[in-house]
Length: 163
Image (cartoon, rainbow, N blue to C red; front, side, top):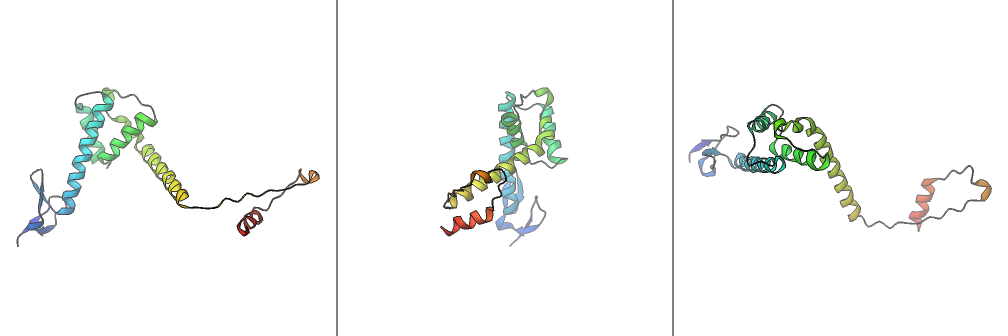
């Protein structure tokens, strides 16, 4: 069996496992990454055309895409999400003369928003899976004691658990 060199990672692998993308040979792992990157790239282009109301991105937008990916390490999917965040959460109106400058300035905010949404979704999922019984506790307080009330929450919780 022959060996091939992956254009993605540079490792040698069996030729029988070779997969080709854009005329280049990749190992199965890198091939999947290339396919996903190609899809993410097309999704970004589609999003840009939709939000900027244009048939194809301008040279400035292509430059921003390349610079943000190579210099800042932003994946295409992060750029797409940041554009969505800018449009629907921040209310930006896009103008092609500025290109995708908002991505550079809002990517961290979009990421924080995304992480916040994940936490909310996770807490809702956990809450829906938990079938806790909610106990109602009534506290009777004498009229003269209403000015300085100290309530032992732990005692209330323990009383609620005993029921």
